[in-house]
Image (tube, rainbow, N blue to C red; front, side):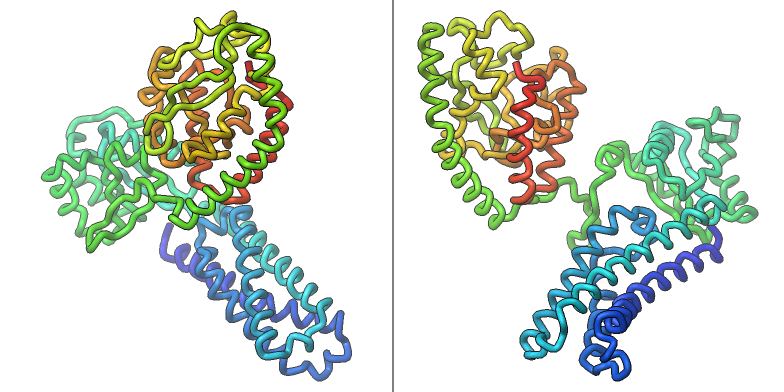
Length: 472
């Protein structure tokens, strides 16, 4: 992308900022004209101050919410939620100011409601127009950046594969260059190898290149620095691609530790305050569940005792918070001589080990109700990743060996129910794909935890249990 197009990008972003600042003022003016025509001629000074305050605040709040970048403007749905939150916060601040200064009664509610929603509509319209402009530029090739890659080995191949998997279209790989290209080299993932690093320097001087990405192993420090010293003379953005493990952590952000850039592999998502809030939630919900399901639990205990010999409850060792082992309580659903603690074979459809009562309580998830006591004692939560038995396997491979991110699900307490379960990933995990999908859902839950999210999962669990899918 040449300098002219870069200038157009900056001009578009500036235009969006200015329109965002003008939108509240214009919406307030139209709302006065419609709702308070008698004020339209005089245009009371209090309304002018409100319009100015709204415009000034919204420009700053939207900036803090990260709404002014080309990448964000390309994603309209991602912006809408931020806009609603940001503009509502601005209106809330103005309401508080009006209340404190004792002028809130001067602003009719009808006008305020019109102003709020018409401003939102204006912000949305601005985003759709900006998206249309950017889409047109992409079709015309004006947003495309020309990228050259240094490295025809595994690192360069992995980089090209990763870029294609992201699905973005704001770049064009013009070619691959490699020191070994003194002799012809085969294309890398369909991209031709155009020559050595010296050839790249000559190429960049004749043909505009927006960015050069060096895709070499970081361990080869001398080789990397030799290439960089040659490329530094070019007036081009030069980037160093991540080493192999970096592609597995491509979603991670960066931060500064002193003057050293470090990769944020995992953040502690739940602060002490959130942990306390979740614990209070667990005690309240578990207490309610105990009162509601006590008759069901008593009836289940009697039915199990009459159906087959052995204890009513079954204790099974599973992984809990911080990868510590906990004893999980369940109603016994199998014949007593078939119950195993460590590394059991997972139950399957029409499993002969399951009793008549056990088949019913497993299908309805009644067998999990004793885990309410695990929640009350603090070993589990109402909502969280479901605890798996120690030694559980998929395709004869231990879960923790089958999925690299498996251990990350133990950063929170395991739950009676979870995001994976309400999305259909409950029951037998006999394949690596199934456990991978379940872990993906668990990690999504951990990254996006909130009290409302927990309550949503509890509500969805009711319908998941009624459907009985994959429960046997």
